[in-house]
Length: 313
Image (cartoon, rainbow, N blue to C red; front, top):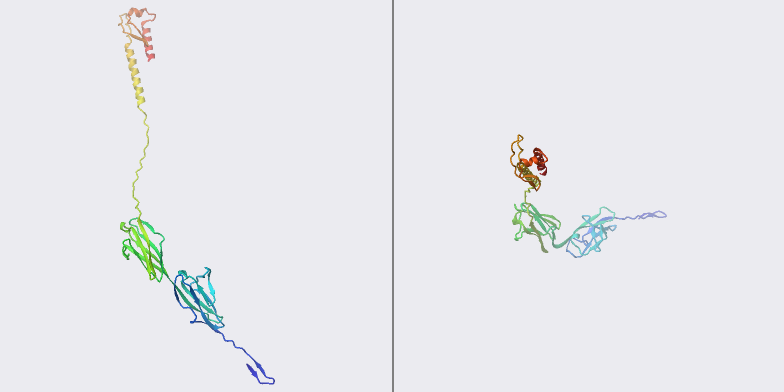
């Protein structure tokens, strides 16, 4: 208060408001926590400052916070909050941020670690390969504390890195991606393989069976094209030719049986044998006088007989 001793006295009152930036107190604030999967967790954050700081919670990586009712929220307001039945997905860093309008704001990082025994899952439990191929077997593992991971063969021995086998591990927080590369597969490589994961809380394994795929055989295919060729039958022409020859022989035989022409100079004609006039009818032997006694002359009868013979054939 400022006062002047005059008559009358004068005075003026002033108010001083002191502000203090926020500060997070160690006492009353949660520290890093290690819990078993399925446990309940309580987060607390105590801060001082003037005016009184506001407390906000969020995850360090920006992931949503899953509450007990399944609701997912980006931030939580208040000095404390609870997580029930935590699992491996809750594992990570949580930030407690205190602010009161007086810079700077402050934060504290609280790490939540969830312990759980190993768990393995395999995408392909049955894998086929041909001899001579390079084959890779894959296996995924989750565990915390971090697990020891390795491969075993069907005989039970641990597979180490070498010219034949190449095991590989890729770690990401509590996740491990396991690979086993088999170079130039041989018949002895077919069988079962196990990926094993163990930590202080337990041990588990998964089995992958490698089976043989027959190599495609090289077969030369010969295509034979058959073409049906129709050859004219020789039987019919041969039969026709034979019939023709028989007819000619028959004709010649009939011609030979025709008596010769009589001697036009008046000599005696030789006595003919039986002459075929028409089918199944024959004349008896005749002498010259009988021939001359017919109505037609001998040359005419001779030509008539010859014509009948030809036409009958």
